[in-house]
Structures are given as C-alpha cells and as structure tokens.
Length: 146
Image 1: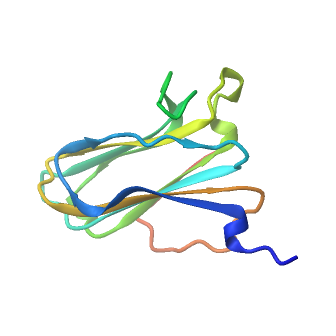
Image 2 (image 1 turned 180 degrees about the vertical axis):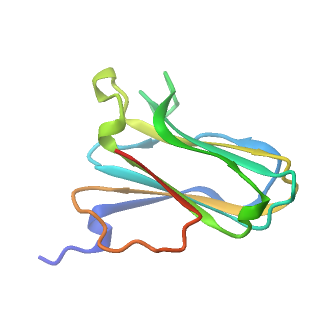
C-alpha cells in the first residue's frame, strides 16, 4: 500500500486569514493522542512600529483547556515591525507534554499588541511516525522543543 502525506498529517485552521487587531486570540486546543509532534505555522503581513506579537504553546488535560500550563521553551516573544510579511513555526514534540499528568491537548496562545489591521493566519499540523523529508527555508524563526 502506498502511504500518502495525509496518512501522517492532520491539518487544522486555528485562525482564518483576515485582519488581526490588538487582541488575545483564544486558544484552540488540539488532541495530540496518537500523534508524535505538532507544528504551529503563524503568518502575518505588515506590522506598524508599535505592533508586537507574542506566542506561547500551552498544554491542557482537556479540549476545553483544563489545567492549562506553558510548554517550556515553546515560545516566541516580541515579533516586531522589522519582521513584516513573514511566517514562523513552533514545533513541539509530544514528549514535551506532561503526559503523566494527563496532558495531551495543546494550543497556541497568541497576544497581539498595537496592531490595527494586520492580515494573518494560523495553522496547526499534527503528524505521527515519520519525520518530514523537506522543510521550507523562508522562515522568520523556527522554534523546536524536544
């Protein structure tokens, strides 16, 4: 049997493309059960001089966010106006979760300050069993938590 990309991946639209404003985007918790890793892909347009974006991957014991806490090292702070029209990824290995404590759900907490009409979107890609062979090279930043 030939295995396809979709056999190993689950892709989720966390925040649809559109205007992002001075806000905190509510966390959408995704189940990592049976998955090896998750990668959040965050893209945005032009930033003004006072705009900042802060991102933190969090874990929880339920899809409602029960007991939510940060995943150490899975953070990007102070994306600023010198990073216009870029994207970044935050990759987290499932072993970074507190599975003994019942944590199997993850989300990306996003705080946007100063922005008035910045276009952006957020995707999550969960994968199992196989490492990707090729990754795009046009990142602003890549954070990998093992």
